[in-house]
Length: 178
Image (cartoon, rainbow, N blue to C red):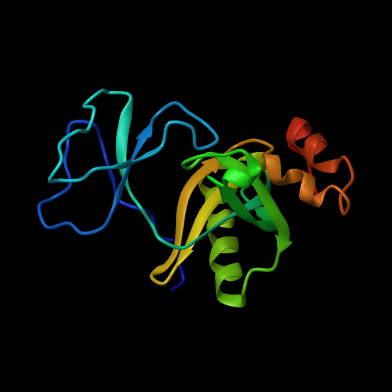
C-alpha cells in the first residue's frame, strides 16, 4: 500500500456494527502512556462504561513501533528515526497497554519507510507543524496503522541523541531547521 491505515474508532454513544469482527480497546480521551486502556468485552457483554470520557478503537494485531519526525514549520518534514514500541511487559514493570520503553533505532523496510515518510510529509503539509513529533504505529498483515500523533518530544528521542546530541529538544523549542 501507499498510505497508512487508521483503526476504526467509535465514540461513547455508539456500538460496533453487529457482525463487525475483531477485538476492541476502550480508551480514555485524556490519558497518556497507555494508562487506562483496556480490552473491551464486546457486543455480547455490554459492560462498557458509557462515560463521555472513553471511546472504542479497533484493536490491531501486529508489531507496534514509533517514529520521531521533524517538521520545518513550512510544510515539509523529515523522518529522524524509528523504534520498536514496548508496552505491558511485566519484566519492565508495566501492565496492560502501559508504555515501558522503546528499542532502537530500527530500520523500516523499504515500502514501510516510504509510507511512513509520506504520512509525515502529508502531516507537515496539512498542518505546517514545526518541531518534533512522535507517531505511534502498528505494522500488521493488512498494512501500517497510524494510532496517534504526539506533537512533542517523545520518550524515544533519547535513542537519537548520540547522532544529534541535544538537537532534538532544541528543535522542539525553536521549531527550526534540521
